[in-house]
Image (cartoon, rainbow, N blue to C red; front, side, top):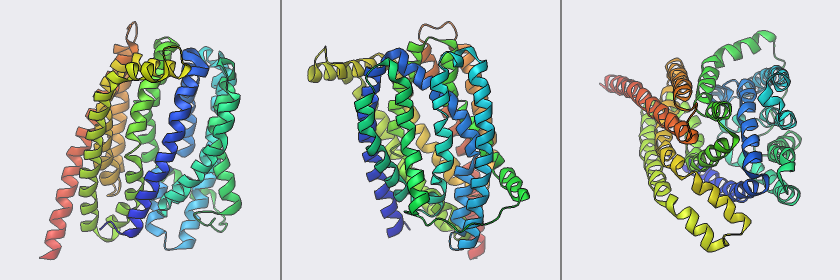
Length: 435
Protein backbone atom coordinates (compact mmCIF):
# COMPACT_ATOMS: atom_id res chain seq x y z
CA UNK A 1 0.00 0.00 0.00
CA UNK A 2 2.59 2.54 1.10
CA UNK A 3 5.13 1.87 -1.65
CA UNK A 4 8.78 2.79 -1.78
CA UNK A 5 8.17 6.17 -3.39
CA UNK A 6 5.68 7.22 -0.73
CA UNK A 7 7.89 5.95 2.11
CA UNK A 8 10.89 7.85 0.76
CA UNK A 9 8.76 10.98 0.43
CA UNK A 10 7.60 10.71 4.04
CA UNK A 11 11.10 9.97 5.34
CA UNK A 12 12.65 12.86 3.42
CA UNK A 13 9.92 15.25 4.56
CA UNK A 14 10.46 14.33 8.20
CA UNK A 15 14.20 14.70 7.80
CA UNK A 16 13.75 18.16 6.31
CA UNK A 17 11.14 19.03 8.94
CA UNK A 18 13.67 18.13 11.63
CA UNK A 19 16.22 20.46 10.06
CA UNK A 20 13.56 23.16 9.88
CA UNK A 21 12.87 22.73 13.58
CA UNK A 22 16.54 23.11 14.42
CA UNK A 23 16.42 26.51 12.73
CA UNK A 24 13.11 27.35 14.47
CA UNK A 25 14.41 26.43 17.92
CA UNK A 26 17.38 28.73 17.34
CA UNK A 27 15.41 31.70 16.02
CA UNK A 28 12.37 31.43 18.34
CA UNK A 29 14.11 32.09 21.70
CA UNK A 30 16.59 34.41 20.00
CA UNK A 31 13.82 36.67 18.70
CA UNK A 32 11.99 36.69 22.05
CA UNK A 33 15.18 37.86 23.75
CA UNK A 34 16.30 40.39 21.15
CA UNK A 35 12.93 41.91 20.24
CA UNK A 36 11.44 41.80 23.74
CA UNK A 37 7.81 41.13 24.60
CA UNK A 38 6.52 44.29 22.88
CA UNK A 39 8.54 43.84 19.68
CA UNK A 40 7.83 40.11 19.48
CA UNK A 41 4.11 40.78 20.00
CA UNK A 42 4.03 43.54 17.33
CA UNK A 43 5.80 41.32 14.82
CA UNK A 44 3.39 38.42 15.40
CA UNK A 45 0.42 40.78 15.21
CA UNK A 46 1.65 41.92 11.77
CA UNK A 47 2.30 38.32 10.70
CA UNK A 48 -1.24 37.35 11.71
CA UNK A 49 -2.81 40.28 9.84
CA UNK A 50 -0.79 39.79 6.65
CA UNK A 51 -1.96 36.17 6.48
CA UNK A 52 -5.25 37.48 5.09
CA UNK A 53 -3.34 38.68 2.02
CA UNK A 54 -1.60 35.33 1.75
CA UNK A 55 -4.95 33.54 2.07
CA UNK A 56 -6.50 35.63 -0.69
CA UNK A 57 -3.49 35.05 -2.94
CA UNK A 58 -3.46 31.29 -2.31
CA UNK A 59 -7.26 31.14 -2.77
CA UNK A 60 -7.41 27.49 -1.71
CA UNK A 61 -5.13 26.36 -4.55
CA UNK A 62 -2.90 24.58 -2.02
CA UNK A 63 -5.74 22.01 -1.83
CA UNK A 64 -7.64 22.20 -5.13
CA UNK A 65 -4.62 22.54 -7.43
CA UNK A 66 -2.71 19.83 -5.57
CA UNK A 67 -5.60 17.42 -6.11
CA UNK A 68 -5.93 18.40 -9.79
CA UNK A 69 -2.21 18.02 -10.51
CA UNK A 70 -2.04 14.69 -8.66
CA UNK A 71 -4.79 13.29 -10.89
CA UNK A 72 -3.16 14.37 -14.21
CA UNK A 73 0.54 14.30 -13.38
CA UNK A 74 1.18 11.61 -16.01
CA UNK A 75 -0.02 14.08 -18.66
CA UNK A 76 2.61 16.89 -18.93
CA UNK A 77 0.39 19.08 -21.12
CA UNK A 78 -2.54 18.93 -18.68
CA UNK A 79 -0.25 19.56 -15.69
CA UNK A 80 1.34 22.55 -17.47
CA UNK A 81 -2.07 24.07 -18.19
CA UNK A 82 -3.06 23.74 -14.53
CA UNK A 83 0.25 25.30 -13.45
CA UNK A 84 -0.03 28.41 -15.59
CA UNK A 85 -3.76 28.83 -14.95
CA UNK A 86 -3.18 28.76 -11.20
CA UNK A 87 0.00 30.86 -11.29
CA UNK A 88 -1.57 33.66 -13.32
CA UNK A 89 -4.65 33.62 -11.09
CA UNK A 90 -2.39 33.93 -8.04
CA UNK A 91 -0.53 36.89 -9.58
CA UNK A 92 -3.81 38.76 -10.07
CA UNK A 93 -4.89 37.95 -6.53
CA UNK A 94 -1.50 39.08 -5.20
CA UNK A 95 -1.95 42.51 -6.78
CA UNK A 96 -5.45 42.86 -5.33
CA UNK A 97 -4.48 41.71 -1.83
CA UNK A 98 -1.37 43.92 -1.75
CA UNK A 99 -3.43 46.97 -2.70
CA UNK A 100 -6.08 46.25 -0.06
CA UNK A 101 -3.48 45.69 2.66
CA UNK A 102 -1.65 48.85 1.66
CA UNK A 103 -4.83 50.88 2.16
CA UNK A 104 -5.56 49.19 5.50
CA UNK A 105 -2.02 49.79 6.76
CA UNK A 106 -2.49 53.55 6.58
CA UNK A 107 -6.18 53.53 7.54
CA UNK A 108 -6.27 51.45 10.75
CA UNK A 109 -4.65 53.05 13.77
CA UNK A 110 -3.35 49.76 15.21
CA UNK A 111 -1.70 48.98 11.86
CA UNK A 112 -0.43 52.50 11.21
CA UNK A 113 1.47 52.44 14.51
CA UNK A 114 3.64 49.68 13.03
CA UNK A 115 3.33 50.66 9.35
CA UNK A 116 6.93 49.77 8.48
CA UNK A 117 6.49 46.26 9.89
CA UNK A 118 3.20 45.74 8.02
CA UNK A 119 4.62 46.98 4.72
CA UNK A 120 7.56 44.60 4.79
CA UNK A 121 5.46 41.61 5.79
CA UNK A 122 3.93 41.87 2.30
CA UNK A 123 7.02 39.99 1.17
CA UNK A 124 5.19 36.88 2.38
CA UNK A 125 2.51 37.48 -0.26
CA UNK A 126 5.15 37.69 -2.97
CA UNK A 127 6.81 34.50 -1.72
CA UNK A 128 3.53 32.56 -1.84
CA UNK A 129 3.39 33.20 -5.61
CA UNK A 130 7.09 32.88 -6.37
CA UNK A 131 7.52 29.42 -4.84
CA UNK A 132 4.80 27.02 -6.16
CA UNK A 133 5.00 24.42 -3.41
CA UNK A 134 1.52 23.16 -4.41
CA UNK A 135 3.00 22.00 -7.74
CA UNK A 136 5.69 19.98 -5.97
CA UNK A 137 3.05 18.40 -3.75
CA UNK A 138 0.90 17.37 -6.71
CA UNK A 139 3.88 15.44 -8.10
CA UNK A 140 4.67 13.96 -4.66
CA UNK A 141 8.08 15.62 -4.65
CA UNK A 142 7.68 17.76 -1.56
CA UNK A 143 10.99 16.60 -0.15
CA UNK A 144 12.77 18.50 -2.91
CA UNK A 145 10.71 21.64 -2.33
CA UNK A 146 11.38 21.40 1.39
CA UNK A 147 15.06 20.87 0.67
CA UNK A 148 15.17 24.14 -1.24
CA UNK A 149 13.46 25.87 1.68
CA UNK A 150 15.90 24.47 4.26
CA UNK A 151 18.86 25.48 2.11
CA UNK A 152 17.47 29.00 1.81
CA UNK A 153 16.64 29.24 5.54
CA UNK A 154 20.12 28.07 6.53
CA UNK A 155 21.58 30.67 4.20
CA UNK A 156 19.69 33.51 5.87
CA UNK A 157 19.86 32.24 9.47
CA UNK A 158 23.37 33.58 9.98
CA UNK A 159 22.31 37.07 8.92
CA UNK A 160 19.36 36.94 11.33
CA UNK A 161 21.60 36.01 14.27
CA UNK A 162 24.23 38.55 13.26
CA UNK A 163 22.12 41.59 12.45
CA UNK A 164 19.09 41.46 14.78
CA UNK A 165 20.26 42.89 18.10
CA UNK A 166 17.30 44.70 19.68
CA UNK A 167 13.69 45.89 19.46
CA UNK A 168 14.72 48.44 16.84
CA UNK A 169 15.41 45.56 14.41
CA UNK A 170 11.83 44.25 14.15
CA UNK A 171 11.60 45.18 10.45
CA UNK A 172 14.90 43.48 9.71
CA UNK A 173 13.69 40.34 11.47
CA UNK A 174 10.56 40.36 9.29
CA UNK A 175 12.57 40.73 6.08
CA UNK A 176 15.03 37.97 6.96
CA UNK A 177 12.22 35.56 7.87
CA UNK A 178 10.43 36.20 4.55
CA UNK A 179 13.57 35.89 2.44
CA UNK A 180 14.03 32.07 2.48
CA UNK A 181 10.86 31.27 0.51
CA UNK A 182 11.60 34.04 -1.98
CA UNK A 183 15.14 32.76 -2.42
CA UNK A 184 13.88 29.17 -2.83
CA UNK A 185 11.41 30.37 -5.47
CA UNK A 186 14.10 32.22 -7.42
CA UNK A 187 16.34 29.15 -7.34
CA UNK A 188 13.54 26.95 -8.67
CA UNK A 189 12.56 29.32 -11.49
CA UNK A 190 16.18 29.50 -12.66
CA UNK A 191 17.10 25.83 -12.21
CA UNK A 192 13.90 23.75 -12.24
CA UNK A 193 15.26 21.64 -9.38
CA UNK A 194 12.92 18.98 -8.05
CA UNK A 195 10.13 19.38 -10.61
CA UNK A 196 10.84 20.59 -14.14
CA UNK A 197 9.35 23.94 -14.98
CA UNK A 198 6.32 23.33 -17.20
CA UNK A 199 6.27 24.59 -20.76
CA UNK A 200 4.46 27.90 -21.27
CA UNK A 201 0.76 27.56 -22.02
CA UNK A 202 -1.35 30.55 -23.06
CA UNK A 203 -4.30 30.87 -20.69
CA UNK A 204 -7.58 32.52 -21.57
CA UNK A 205 -9.30 34.84 -19.12
CA UNK A 206 -12.24 32.46 -18.97
CA UNK A 207 -9.91 29.74 -17.69
CA UNK A 208 -8.78 32.00 -14.85
CA UNK A 209 -12.42 32.51 -13.87
CA UNK A 210 -13.00 28.76 -14.02
CA UNK A 211 -9.96 28.14 -11.79
CA UNK A 212 -11.19 30.68 -9.24
CA UNK A 213 -14.72 29.27 -9.34
CA UNK A 214 -13.47 25.69 -8.83
CA UNK A 215 -11.26 26.72 -5.92
CA UNK A 216 -13.87 28.92 -4.23
CA UNK A 217 -14.99 26.28 -1.66
CA UNK A 218 -11.36 25.69 -0.72
CA UNK A 219 -10.75 29.43 -0.36
CA UNK A 220 -13.84 29.74 1.79
CA UNK A 221 -12.47 26.92 3.94
CA UNK A 222 -9.10 28.65 4.27
CA UNK A 223 -10.68 31.97 5.23
CA UNK A 224 -12.87 30.22 7.79
CA UNK A 225 -9.85 28.38 9.19
CA UNK A 226 -8.10 31.71 9.65
CA UNK A 227 -10.97 32.82 11.89
CA UNK A 228 -9.84 30.34 14.54
CA UNK A 229 -6.07 30.45 13.83
CA UNK A 230 -4.52 33.73 12.68
CA UNK A 231 -7.63 35.76 13.50
CA UNK A 232 -7.37 34.65 17.11
CA UNK A 233 -4.09 36.55 17.38
CA UNK A 234 -5.57 39.54 15.54
CA UNK A 235 -8.62 39.68 17.83
CA UNK A 236 -6.41 39.26 20.87
CA UNK A 237 -4.33 42.21 19.68
CA UNK A 238 -7.49 44.29 19.36
CA UNK A 239 -8.94 43.31 22.75
CA UNK A 240 -5.78 43.03 24.85
CA UNK A 241 -2.27 44.41 25.39
CA UNK A 242 0.76 43.38 23.28
CA UNK A 243 2.16 41.38 26.22
CA UNK A 244 -0.84 39.02 26.13
CA UNK A 245 -0.40 38.72 22.36
CA UNK A 246 3.23 37.80 22.86
CA UNK A 247 2.43 35.16 25.51
CA UNK A 248 -0.30 33.67 23.33
CA UNK A 249 2.00 33.71 20.29
CA UNK A 250 4.75 31.94 22.24
CA UNK A 251 2.36 29.21 23.39
CA UNK A 252 0.62 28.76 20.05
CA UNK A 253 3.93 28.67 18.19
CA UNK A 254 5.21 25.83 20.36
CA UNK A 255 1.96 23.87 19.97
CA UNK A 256 1.82 24.38 16.20
CA UNK A 257 5.47 23.38 15.89
CA UNK A 258 4.59 20.10 17.62
CA UNK A 259 1.51 19.72 15.42
CA UNK A 260 3.71 20.36 12.39
CA UNK A 261 5.38 16.99 12.96
CA UNK A 262 2.21 15.45 11.54
CA UNK A 263 2.30 17.74 8.50
CA UNK A 264 4.81 15.79 6.36
CA UNK A 265 2.71 12.62 6.55
CA UNK A 266 -0.42 14.57 5.54
CA UNK A 267 1.40 16.35 2.72
CA UNK A 268 2.80 13.08 1.38
CA UNK A 269 -0.42 11.06 1.58
CA UNK A 270 -2.98 13.66 0.46
CA UNK A 271 -2.07 13.57 -3.27
CA UNK A 272 -1.72 9.78 -3.14
CA UNK A 273 -5.18 9.34 -1.55
CA UNK A 274 -6.62 11.79 -4.11
CA UNK A 275 -5.18 9.66 -6.90
CA UNK A 276 -6.53 6.44 -5.35
CA UNK A 277 -9.96 8.06 -4.88
CA UNK A 278 -10.30 8.13 -8.68
CA UNK A 279 -8.70 4.80 -9.60
CA UNK A 280 -8.83 2.53 -6.53
CA UNK A 281 -11.27 3.48 -3.76
CA UNK A 282 -10.43 0.41 -1.66
CA UNK A 283 -6.78 1.44 -1.60
CA UNK A 284 -7.80 4.98 -0.65
CA UNK A 285 -9.80 3.70 2.35
CA UNK A 286 -6.88 1.53 3.50
CA UNK A 287 -4.49 4.47 3.37
CA UNK A 288 -6.99 6.67 5.23
CA UNK A 289 -7.28 4.02 7.95
CA UNK A 290 -3.50 3.86 8.22
CA UNK A 291 -3.39 7.65 8.48
CA UNK A 292 -5.96 7.59 11.28
CA UNK A 293 -3.88 5.30 13.49
CA UNK A 294 -0.51 6.90 12.71
CA UNK A 295 -1.60 10.53 12.96
CA UNK A 296 -3.89 9.90 15.92
CA UNK A 297 -1.17 8.00 17.78
CA UNK A 298 1.48 10.65 17.13
CA UNK A 299 -0.96 13.44 18.03
CA UNK A 300 -1.90 11.79 21.33
CA UNK A 301 1.74 11.13 22.23
CA UNK A 302 2.78 14.72 21.54
CA UNK A 303 -0.20 16.13 23.46
CA UNK A 304 0.70 14.09 26.56
CA UNK A 305 4.42 14.79 26.19
CA UNK A 306 3.90 18.55 25.96
CA UNK A 307 1.55 18.61 28.94
CA UNK A 308 4.03 16.67 31.08
CA UNK A 309 7.03 18.77 30.02
CA UNK A 310 5.49 22.17 30.72
CA UNK A 311 6.42 22.32 34.45
CA UNK A 312 10.08 21.72 33.50
CA UNK A 313 10.52 24.85 31.38
CA UNK A 314 11.43 27.32 34.12
CA UNK A 315 13.68 25.15 36.38
CA UNK A 316 15.41 23.60 33.38
CA UNK A 317 16.19 26.95 31.77
CA UNK A 318 17.51 28.42 35.03
CA UNK A 319 19.64 25.36 35.93
CA UNK A 320 21.17 25.12 32.46
CA UNK A 321 21.57 28.77 31.48
CA UNK A 322 21.47 30.67 34.76
CA UNK A 323 19.02 33.30 35.91
CA UNK A 324 20.80 36.16 34.14
CA UNK A 325 21.33 34.45 30.81
CA UNK A 326 19.49 35.96 27.86
CA UNK A 327 18.40 32.56 26.59
CA UNK A 328 16.84 31.85 29.99
CA UNK A 329 14.54 34.83 29.48
CA UNK A 330 13.08 33.09 26.44
CA UNK A 331 12.22 29.98 28.44
CA UNK A 332 10.94 32.11 31.32
CA UNK A 333 8.62 33.77 28.81
CA UNK A 334 7.40 30.31 27.86
CA UNK A 335 6.85 29.50 31.55
CA UNK A 336 4.44 32.45 31.78
CA UNK A 337 2.55 30.83 28.90
CA UNK A 338 2.18 27.49 30.71
CA UNK A 339 -1.51 27.86 31.51
CA UNK A 340 -2.19 28.87 27.91
CA UNK A 341 -0.30 25.81 26.66
CA UNK A 342 -2.20 23.46 28.98
CA UNK A 343 -5.38 24.49 27.19
CA UNK A 344 -3.65 24.47 23.81
CA UNK A 345 -1.98 21.04 24.04
CA UNK A 346 -5.06 18.94 23.05
CA UNK A 347 -5.21 20.93 19.81
CA UNK A 348 -2.31 18.77 18.57
CA UNK A 349 -4.42 15.60 18.78
CA UNK A 350 -7.58 17.27 17.48
CA UNK A 351 -5.69 18.76 14.54
CA UNK A 352 -4.25 15.35 13.62
CA UNK A 353 -7.73 13.81 13.56
CA UNK A 354 -9.30 16.71 11.64
CA UNK A 355 -6.74 16.14 8.87
CA UNK A 356 -7.84 12.50 8.58
CA UNK A 357 -11.58 13.11 8.56
CA UNK A 358 -11.45 16.37 6.61
CA UNK A 359 -8.63 16.82 4.13
CA UNK A 360 -7.72 13.15 3.70
CA UNK A 361 -11.31 11.87 3.47
CA UNK A 362 -13.94 14.52 2.69
CA UNK A 363 -11.87 16.52 0.20
CA UNK A 364 -10.48 13.60 -1.79
CA UNK A 365 -13.99 12.24 -2.29
CA UNK A 366 -15.37 15.58 -3.47
CA UNK A 367 -17.17 16.83 -0.37
CA UNK A 368 -15.48 20.24 -0.37
CA UNK A 369 -18.78 22.07 0.13
CA UNK A 370 -19.55 20.28 3.40
CA UNK A 371 -15.91 20.73 4.39
CA UNK A 372 -16.13 24.48 3.83
CA UNK A 373 -19.47 24.81 5.63
CA UNK A 374 -18.04 23.19 8.76
CA UNK A 375 -15.06 25.54 8.72
CA UNK A 376 -17.27 28.59 8.16
CA UNK A 377 -19.34 27.60 11.20
CA UNK A 378 -16.12 26.99 13.19
CA UNK A 379 -14.68 30.37 12.25
CA UNK A 380 -17.84 32.21 13.24
CA UNK A 381 -17.98 30.23 16.48
CA UNK A 382 -14.43 31.27 17.34
CA UNK A 383 -15.09 34.95 16.64
CA UNK A 384 -18.17 34.81 18.86
CA UNK A 385 -16.30 33.07 21.67
CA UNK A 386 -13.41 35.53 21.43
CA UNK A 387 -15.77 38.51 21.60
CA UNK A 388 -17.42 37.06 24.70
CA UNK A 389 -14.43 35.62 26.57
CA UNK A 390 -11.49 37.95 25.85
CA UNK A 391 -12.54 41.61 26.40
CA UNK A 392 -11.72 42.91 29.90
CA UNK A 393 -10.13 39.58 30.88
CA UNK A 394 -6.85 39.67 32.82
CA UNK A 395 -6.04 36.24 31.34
CA UNK A 396 -6.91 37.06 27.74
CA UNK A 397 -4.36 34.59 26.37
CA UNK A 398 -5.91 31.72 28.34
CA UNK A 399 -9.40 32.64 27.15
CA UNK A 400 -8.17 32.71 23.55
CA UNK A 401 -6.66 29.22 23.95
CA UNK A 402 -9.91 27.91 25.42
CA UNK A 403 -11.81 29.31 22.45
CA UNK A 404 -9.49 27.58 19.97
CA UNK A 405 -9.79 24.27 21.83
CA UNK A 406 -13.60 24.33 21.74
CA UNK A 407 -13.61 25.19 18.04
CA UNK A 408 -11.15 22.40 17.17
CA UNK A 409 -13.32 19.88 19.03
CA UNK A 410 -16.38 21.03 17.06
CA UNK A 411 -14.52 20.60 13.77
CA UNK A 412 -13.35 17.07 14.54
CA UNK A 413 -16.85 15.94 15.53
CA UNK A 414 -18.44 17.48 12.42
CA UNK A 415 -15.82 16.00 10.07
CA UNK A 416 -15.97 12.58 11.73
CA UNK A 417 -19.77 12.39 11.47
CA UNK A 418 -19.77 13.01 7.69
CA UNK A 419 -16.58 11.04 6.96
CA UNK A 420 -18.08 7.98 8.64
CA UNK A 421 -21.11 8.18 6.34
CA UNK A 422 -18.93 8.60 3.24
CA UNK A 423 -16.66 5.66 4.01
CA UNK A 424 -19.66 3.42 4.73
CA UNK A 425 -21.20 4.32 1.37
CA UNK A 426 -17.95 3.63 -0.45
CA UNK A 427 -17.47 0.28 1.29
CA UNK A 428 -21.02 -0.69 0.42
CA UNK A 429 -20.39 0.24 -3.21
CA UNK A 430 -17.19 -1.81 -3.30
CA UNK A 431 -18.99 -4.82 -1.80
CA UNK A 432 -21.86 -4.50 -4.29
CA UNK A 433 -19.39 -4.32 -7.17
CA UNK A 434 -17.61 -7.45 -5.97
CA UNK A 435 -20.84 -9.47 -5.81
